[in-house]
Amino acid sequence: MASSAPAAVAPLSRGRRIAVWTLVVLATVLALVAILTTWVNRQMLDNTAWKKATTQVIQDPQVQSALADYTVNQLYENVNVAQELENEFPPALKPLAPTLAGALQGPATKAVTLLLQRPKVQATFIQASAIAHEKLVAVLEDKTCCGISTGNGTVTLNAHELLVSVAQQLGLPDSVISALPDTAGTITLMKSDQLAAAQTGVRAIHLLSVWLLLGVLALYGIAIYLARGVRRATLRNAGLGIALVGLITLVIRQLLGNYITDALASPGYSLATHRLYLIGTSILGQIGQAAILYGVVVALGAVFAGPTRPAVWLRQRLAPVLNEQQGIVWGAVGFVYVLLVLWGGTHALRVWWGILLLAAFIAVGVAALRRLTLSEFPPGAALATAGAPLQAASAGDLARLSELHDEGVLGDDERAPENKPLAPE
Image 1 (cartoon, rainbow, N blue to C red):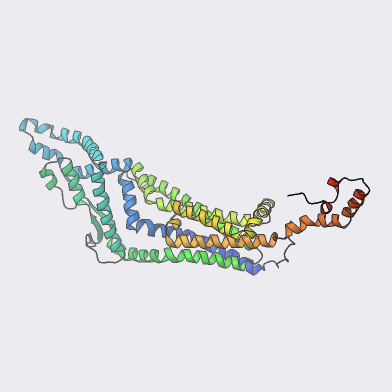
Image 2 (cartoon, helix red, strand yellow):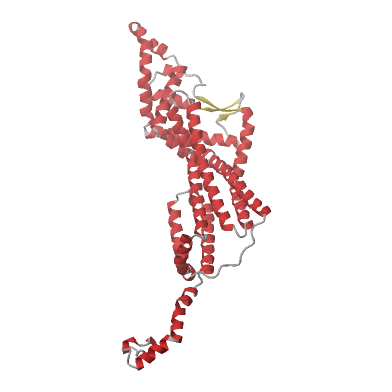
């Protein structure tokens, strides 16, 4: 049986209620910005994540097909293959050179596709991409670096060597390879007049990805502190806000991917562009899913601590263990948390600061739950309640039972328990 209800708490004033909701809404909006900056910092600016994404890209069949098609098209756009074949053919076969050059484009594309499936070629591509990314990030972070040019009004990345390597693997004549202009395969990354803005943005992302998360947690914490009397409901709203942000993140990712595929992809490259987008935003999807998971857990925790009948019933069943067997409780919680860390289902469970932060939140939650069960179901309350009928019986009924036994109405096995002789051991 629950203990007497606590003293009523004065309702929140209108000004404090507005302040609490303002803090919750502001923290939720900042959480969305924090997710986006964290994604850019973890996926676009982290070389390890970039290398992992590149591995997924080069191993994707759609991307392999599109890359092979692009590479062969680059060769045909920069080299007159028909003319080169005509130069190699005897006079009688020279008229066949244009037809043969066109006929070779399809098999060449298939050959490059098979070439891109070889582990050695994939490893070369991944390493080249990782080095290029490292150099680009160095430029964006305004560090001294070579290999990327910022001259002539553009920031460029030279992929000419990859093009030459593919041409050699296809067995094209040296004359064709040497005819490739130095600009073939050169990719323009950004205009130099955009470089300063990009560098400023990168510095801001590095800063915001750390401090925005702390700011979000601080704003939610202040809101809960100010919501005296309705803190559980405020905690629930915070959890729902985090889950909503995660859901919005997934929706934005989906809609933006559809827009890029439909509006920006070149003809024939829609599937490959969509795959590139999904791989490039995979961490954003993971962050969104984690936000939904954490938000739902927080909201359910608040509901579990609430006044609903199922929640009270469940707390009453757990109260004896929570109140009187702390060693078992903390041991079980610690064991489950270690399993979660070993699983590493979210990024926070794979980094030291995330492991410590989540452990602290779980410890605070368990301690708060124990304080609640101690208040609602004190350890001696159930025993005192159960013993009350027995004490009433001892005052009157037990005396009457003893008289009936003396009169012979009751046998020895029916008299009062305290008058029965002890059974022999």
